[in-house]
Every structure is written in C-alpha cells, then in structure tokens.
Image (tube, rainbow, N blue to C red; front, side):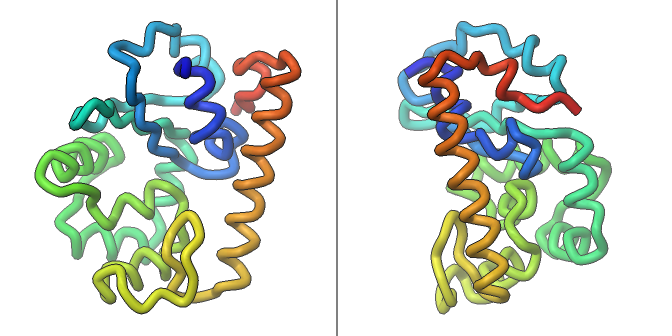
Length: 176
C-alpha cells in the first residue's frame, strides 16, 4: 500500500476534520516517499511516534483541533494524572516517549478524539468492564459513542470510494 492509501484508510476522519488525530501504521513502508508537505498546507501535521516490529507509527493530526481537544478541564485532569504537562508540543513529545516504554499509553485516546469519559473509564477499569467496544472501549454514553463511530466509519467508506473514483488526497483533505 502507498502512504496515500494508508492515510485514507486509517486517517480519513482526521483528513475530513472530524477528529483531532489518527494513528497510522506505516508497515512495509521504509520511508513515506510521498510529499507530506502538500497535506501540511491543508492543515495536517505529522509526528513519527515510534518504530517497532516493522511498523512506523505516525500520528496524523490537526494542530488547532488537537489543542482544543486536550485543553478542556477534564482532558487536562486525565493528562496530569498520567504525568503529562505543558503545551501541545511538550505533551506530544511526552506521548512519543510513552510509546517507547509502553505498548500504547491509555491517554492516547484523548488525542484520537475518544470521549473523555471513555478514556477515564478505560484507565480506571484497566481496559475491562466496557459497555461496548467500537473504535475504542465505551464506558459512558453508548448511543453517543455509536453516533461518533458511525460518522467516522461512514467518512472512511466515502473517502475510500472517492479515492477509488480518482479524487486525489489533497481534495479529500479539508483545508482549515
């Protein structure tokens, strides 16, 4: 698969500005090879998180949307209790460091746009006792979570269809 195909498959809700960030495993790609600058001009940012077992993990994010997402009082409480602090760049660096020592830090759910109550519930329950599993484990409002997940899934389906019909990724990436 190409980088473009991976981005559309795994990050289309971020491309569409529906969520603050997505994680994309660049398995099989030594170097992206494709110019990400054209997407940066449309408001996307990229951060290499970690490389392990043949997978380069890339965080694809909308800087402003991510800053808003993690700046709420509840998100700040969750991040502080997990040892995160500082501005977005500091927190992103801390997230990258956590990926070096943990498989997947639980707080990453905040970055990915999962509801704060579900991220807190996952941490408090050690990933057990979820009410539902979608793109994430749901611990609070199941109906709300289902609406969010359905929106993201519909976005991916539409983006894959548009790409298959010849729409280039720049046109699929909502400029903000």
